Length: 500
Image 1 (cartoon, rainbow, N blue to C red):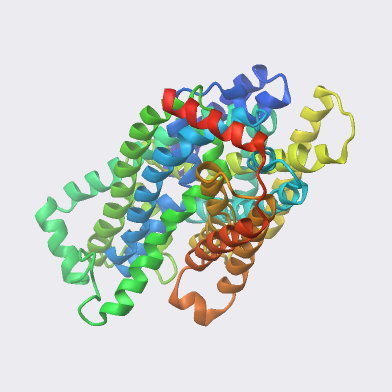
Image 2 (tube, rainbow, N blue to C red):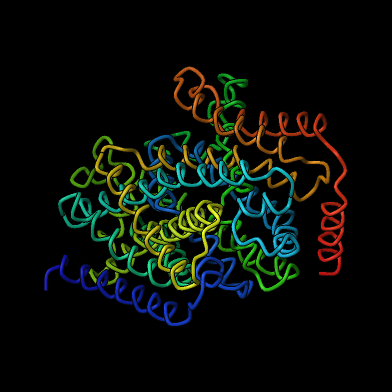
């Protein structure tokens, strides 16, 4: 058999396993609570691995290695910022959100948590939060489809649109029927596959280059500053500091990512967040290191082989090309499937969150009585609708994966992050303050990202996050009135976390 045939067989095996897990989850999903949140029964290991897989979309295996391959280790500040942000998220947000979302009338989505936590006059906030989810996640899902199309073009020479459609359909099927549980269990399998691939590719490449010393020598011959995390500081210290802050500010986004923090809400208890945090950070450290070393070693390898060079604009494919060169075709197919795992795990989680926003946070506010069975059907139709819109956006094959992801990441981080933090740590946040802050954060991201001068100076999440926080606090202080019910629930949450 040809190499392409072996690789396709491996990928078909991967697809079959994902669909099988989706079918298993379908058999265990009987109601909307199960479809949206798996009835809060995730173990720490499953919650941690599924959160990581949902977080690390195609950017981890394509976008991040591509950025480092093109610019050097300075781009590793993204991974550093994300790792630090993830630690803070699991440490300070997860246990409180798990406890508070249950105390606040069993909220199962982020918009419903905002409304049930803040009580009075929260309808507008809930609607706007749901709309923000739909807008930014459509961009996010679209970035996954773009990555899928590029994957099949690079790996098999397929038509971009065919590759995009294949991944979209398979992801849609297991998400449509398996719901949150299906997305979560497939995320676990995909997270383990991604980790194995990110460890294997750089290790094998180092041996192929003759060992670590030879590899580093070839890398520094091409890019002397490749291993310098502080490259450029001596030339312009102020500019370097601004760039490092802007790049590492990706970590701020964690506090507001609905597809990640919803895993906190699905934990069996607040106390299990500690175990989940340790598992999550171990996975992140290994995976990010693998992505970084893949890019750096790729610099040395491709420079030494003039017949196998990455062309201009192809840096995002460094992981794909190296895996095909160094592994048996079937094993290479499994490694390539890890790229699909990164893409599909994020897409499925985002589709579920979009469905919950449409059904739980928008349709339910219309006040119509709907049976549990029909709500489940509506949820599945919502997943289908989001997938179709994202696919139409992904028809532009020239979209850069990292740019699509960074815009959506900033949108959620700046719009939701400060509100989540204030909901969990400040009793006096008001619905009006939260609404004003959320609007400020979202609008700032949209404006900043579309003004070239501002975009070049600072990642839009930084001004959006800070302005949201400032406006929410000021407006809340101006509009605060004591609410005994809110105070009582806040105290119950703190007691539950302390006990855990």
